[in-house]
Image (cartoon, one colour):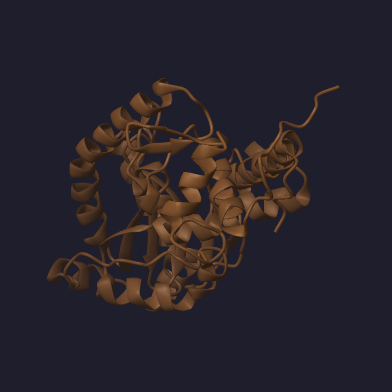
Length: 312
């Protein structure tokens, strides 16, 4: 039988929020700075976060190592983060160039970075993930074009061109709403399409219910469609493109069902491979479910260990 560790005094709500935040990122062995703890807290902080952090340090529930706060007294995870941050900074040069290239494609309206690079971290196994907004009715054509580029020029490698999430300009709100999707939305890194990004953020204000302290930042200039892009969009009649877009959607959905349908149940498959005229998501590992399951387990285990109720 494992006995709960002793806590010197009752724990305040702000301290619980700090622990909830650290527990989420502990899934990825990713320690946080003080400003990151505040930004990703699941509830508004009632007092100065510094004092609540100091209280948890005094109680020896969390640790401070070289400017980072974590639940493990392990310097190696600090070094891991620093190396990952440096690698992400180097890979951003490639990500910016490819984002610009993608933005030249017909019917692409905005390109944002998602996944680990959007959070400033990468390791040797990380892909560069892109979140792409397309013109309405042309999403699957763009997705098909990206697949062709990857096969022809990148040997079908997803390392530098992992395009796993597409939405169109008329359906900017993310349907799945939870702490995982809130963090993913909040950390998207805009590369092109300022006006669309602003509309996207307006449509997804719901994420502030999960991250009330987070503030979005758009730090790039407005860009416009190029003459080549305009020409490409006008070359073929709209009815032909409508049929081509629908054909691409059917082909993608057929391949995903054949390849992945047997690996998960109907509900999970419909989320991991959300497919409609206005949205396309392809996550074979259904990472969202894995993260949420791990987070809930850690909340329970940590709460039992220290006799703290961390449920929201």
